[in-house]
Length: 206
Image 1 (cartoon, rainbow, N blue to C red):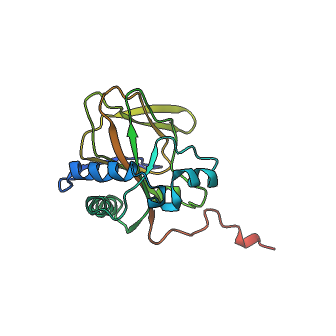
Image 2: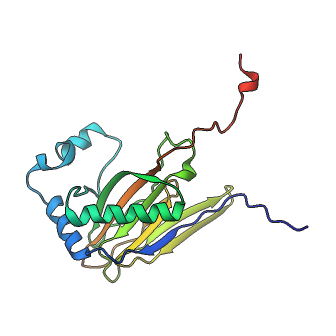
Image 3: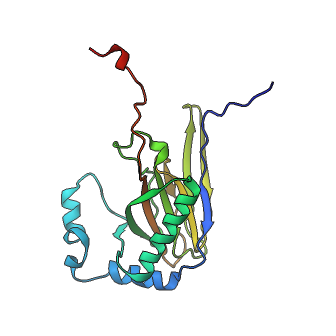
């Protein structure tokens, strides 16, 4: 009998959130990002977090307006979508915003951290609050067995939600629109993480 044995599947899930007021969400994001009082931000503002984590530039990243009505509603809807896509209970780990001005771009990076024993169980999202014409694409960069390389661009749209494994490298091309491209990014971890040893050598333990 013929049989196909799947070694690995890598997908990006695309959806549109219909019940989010993106104009109100944008207002909450901009008011929070432009707050003049740094004490209103977690960890006492961006300057403090930069000094604590010198390996991260935080060049594009802005704090997320947790507690604001539409911002909280968005996180609820995103969590529902992530749970539906993964078929498991996922917990929000972190969320932030990025606003690209004309001429800016985002370098290639991943959201993987070294505490993830099974990286394929961890997910990240991008939700597009604004997507003006000539906005930068989100580009996924994948390599198969160190042989086949692909760069897959995704044309973004307002209200679009993309869900993908946190370990997938991604970037943007240049932002050409005069209007800002505003995105909400977040990371999700499994509620019950897989702790099974990936290689069990207990038979030979001392």
